[in-house]
Amino acid sequence: MASKQIPLFDGHCDTLSRLTLHPEEKLFEAHGQWNLGLSVRYKPQAQFFAVFWDSKAPMAQYFAKRQRKTFLRNCNIARDKVALCRTAEEAKAAGEQRKLAAFLSLEGAELIGCSERELEKWHKKGLRMLNLTWNHANAISGSCAEEGDRGLSEQGRAFVRKAQELGVLIDVSHLSDPGFRDVAELSSEAKIPFIASHSNSRAVFDHPRNLTDEQFHAIIKCHGTVGLNAYARFLGDGEATTETLIAHLEHFLSLGGERNVALGGDWDGCGELPVGYTGVWSWANLYETLLRLNYKENLVKDLFYNNLMRTVGRVCTM
Image 1 (tube, rainbow, N blue to C red):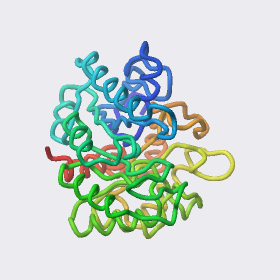
Image 2 (cartoon, one colour; image 1 turned 90 degrees about the vertical axis):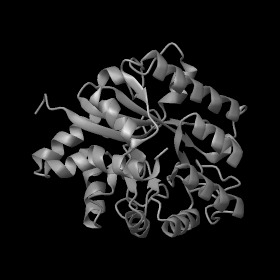
Image 3 (cartoon, rainbow, N blue to C red; image 1 turned 120 degrees about the vertical axis):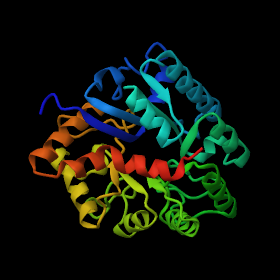
Image 4 (cartoon, helix red, strand yellow; image 1 turned 120 degrees about the horizontal axis):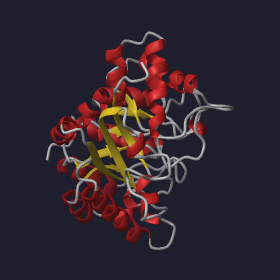
């Protein structure tokens, strides 16, 4: 089993923040929790790279644009190993060429001024997924950590519709519960999937960053996906392990989520990981453990790759 190649599509990492602060590092040799050179077992491999900066810090929008440039520059530098992708078809072609399929996402619409015009500009540069909020509330909605009783504003509703029109996946990780309900309603009406790229189960561990069963069912109804988050603080009290991750997976599966659970490690965005985990390469621990526990390999491959790719294929079509 040690030499088995593993398909991987991870929905969230914050590595662009690191690479912008440490421009001497590159995707294939970064010193944080995401490193292409240490991910040789993943074939095919795809990754959403999030542009993130605390919006209350000085020059946040400037640093967001710098991260986008860092992403595009790294894709160009390593073009023999990395392909900038906008659609599932492009990602599959990258996999056939044994290249990383690199997708661009944005964590917090305030980083583009909650502006539909800026959204269009970013879409042209490759943006294909967007968190409506990070932990700060903004003009679109409250967040899980700030103004948690506020849902989508009228501006927010228009923004979501514009993103859906463009083919940008709406990501509800970090969003307030009322905001989630509003996104679910709009997505159901439009018959367009949405995603929680890096969120676990609130029934397993009661944390506002995790999803309730009702929320998970809403994502299933819209054919979206939920990415298991490796951040130990969202997994439970005490020491987190592979078994802790599996507890969240098992609960989602018990709700009928075989085609809706994916991975979103939050790499380079979390300081505490499960025992034995040090970075994206550690997802192999979960893969091998699931096979040893007699999970069907097709189910494990869906979790690791197919489910998220299916959602991207439904939404990111241009």
